[in-house]
Length: 297
Image (cartoon, rainbow, N blue to C red; front, side, top):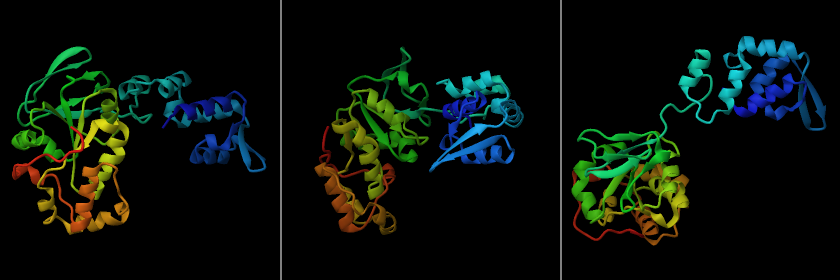
């Protein structure tokens, strides 16, 4: 894979300069040393590389690496911010020269129409039953300021939000909700959340790992705008939850704590019962009426 730093290091070698040994991937450096194309200079613990024959080095790189057949194209691929597989294929016939995420973004869902904007163009977010939308141009996706964003960790809950409408209405009464999922795993969703001012509510598994995800990957970045969805019947459900899941996570998360009272209360309940409960349990079964336990909303 061709990165900007690797391109610059190779260009420096081809211009007759020396480079730090750490700036060249070990596998590539060993290969070029074996071929007699590089020389090593050592000064104490510091090692540098230099080309023995610059023309021979360029010929070898061009012959053995598709990315480097055309150095003008190589520069474009290493520096272009919106590099795509299409660009790579057009330039070289190979769409996999550099590591590129072909599908950035995140999926969204709603069980009621929401008037949003994508790239300045109005769109209605109201996917037909059995479907959801995927936002790739998330940097230019805007939603009404009064909409509460609900992040759902597991895809079954996310896909079946209509089956949980009555439950969400009880948990978040009077709120218009946009459901989002962190799928595929990336920081795109969190980055988008950091650009908006809407409240964020996290709905995940009720176990130590799920709480850690909320605290480390969302609340730490969103601060007071982020809340954890904690159903009022969670103690009853935890009392009949999975001990196997709890035991599998305990060693890694046994010191987990939170400065948010409601979240710490949930942590204490999980440790009290030595059990965990998956959020999918709320799809089929409803919940008893009760006040929502949330730190902020």
